[in-house]
Image (cartoon, rainbow, N blue to C red; front, top):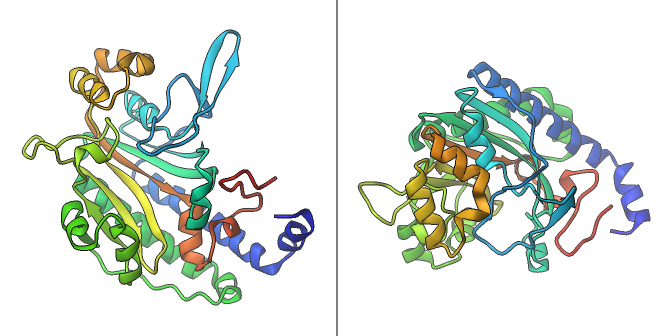
Length: 307
C-alpha cells in the first residue's frame, strides 16, 4: 500500500473502530484465561528452535556471537517446556512466517502476526476444545457489550454461536469435498466448527498420534463460518523422547535440528494439549472485514508489502 493510501487509512474512523475492537479482544481473552488459572508468560522472539511448520515457508535466521537464532514461527516447543513451571500458560506471541506470495490472494495471511498461544499440562483434546469454545464465546460477549459504537461503524452484528460446535472428521470432509474442503465448509457454515482427526502425514511431528487409531492425530482446527477460514490450530502433544525422535525422522528432518528441545524431552516433559489462535484473523471475523490487512495499523503482507 502506498504511503498516501496508508495515511488516509490511519486517519479513518473505520481503522479506529477495528483497533478498538482488537484491543478488547486482547483484554477479554487475557482476562478470561487468568480467571481460568492461566499464567501469562513472555513471548519468545528468537530461539535456536522453532516450529518447522508443515507447509512451505521461507525460513530465516540471524547470527549473533557465532550462534544461529531462528525467528519465531510459533512457540510450540517453548510452551511445552514452560509447563515445567506452571500447569497452565499463555502468551501473546508475535510470529514471523515468510509465506509465499501466492498466499496474498487468501486475504487471511500476514507475514507478521500475533498468536494467542496457550498450553495445559495433562490436558486432553476434549479439554482444549471446550476451552477454545468458552474463550471464543467470552470474547464475542465482551466485544458486543464494550464495543457497540465500533460495531455500528462497521455495520457488524454479532451473535453468540451455539455450543458445542460441530466436529467434522478430516477424512469425512476430504471424501465429500476434496482437498479444498476447509474453504468450502467455511462458506457453507453459519457458525464456527471443528475439523478433527487429521492424518499423521498432514501435520507436524509434535501432534500426538492416537494410540487406538494409528495414523490418526489427536488434533483439531477451528474454522470460522462465512468463508473466513481457519481460526485456531492445536491438539494433544507428543512428549516422549523416543516417539518424537521417530516422528521427526519420518518427516525427513533430523532430531539434531531441535537439540535443546530433545534434551528437555530426555529429562522429561509432561503430557499436554493446547492451541494457538491468530488475533488478526479473529479480529477480521468479528469485524466482518474483507481482508486481514485491515486488522492492523502496520500490516506486512506476503510478497513484502508493508511498513
